[in-house]
Image 1 (cartoon, rainbow, N blue to C red):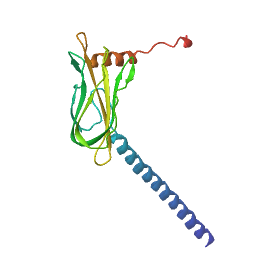
Image 2: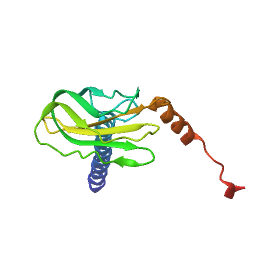
Image 3: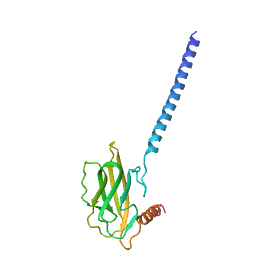
Image 4: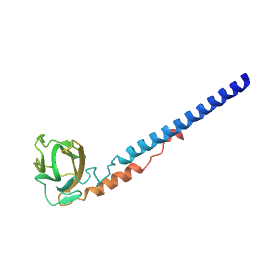
Length: 174
């Protein structure tokens, strides 16, 4: 009788171990699905595409626009009321340019900001961030250039992307 009881206990222990393995695999699978859905839902920023989710209807200057003369202001038109929390202007050589943007807690659909006198440059980048009524932070960017000899900013950005892909040999390995 002792041998039968011992065999039943061993079988019960073996079944418990198998159920624990199945539960562990199931929990790992559910965790993988959950993490995958979070990763797929994350926006990816690329040139010409912002994670604004269609919130920004239009902007002036337009993305990748080449203007004949120096712009006097930046204009952003949103599809719904937002609170603009960031507006920055950057240039490749100077870095960030002070444009005296001040946060205003009043929500609006249209924002216009006067620019200081801009010097000739290859291109400029405008970065913005806004809070939706739900409290969600949305951000985006666009590029522009100006002048007689100006090229679309995308040409410079494509050249930079190409230069980044070129790998120089590591002479320490020779």
